[in-house]
Image 1: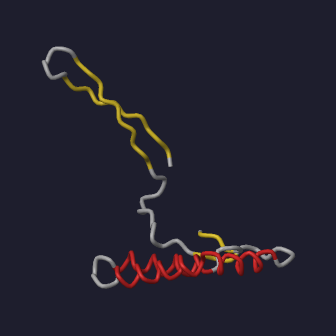
Image 2 (image 1 turned 135 degrees about the horizontal axis):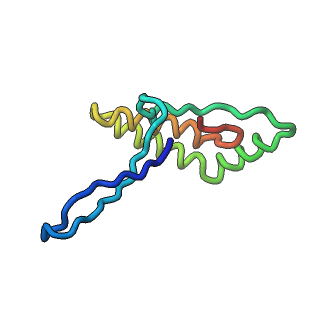
Length: 107
């Protein structure tokens, strides 16, 4: 993405002195809209050792289960309405990540 500085010429409120209005405009290289809700969770390349598994077990018992339950609850609440279904789906994806976050990345 590139940022372009654009200036528009307009008159001030009294109509005598000109003023310039500066705005920033982001220019995308492609014409496609960015897909925010289409992010995927995938595993990172395996690393030697079992640190990821050990950290996931600690994470699960310290707070991961409560974050997972919260995401499941809000996912169900959001899926009640048609407008909330995309938000509910995102909460279900985040619930999967909240259960064992070590060794995964969001792409």
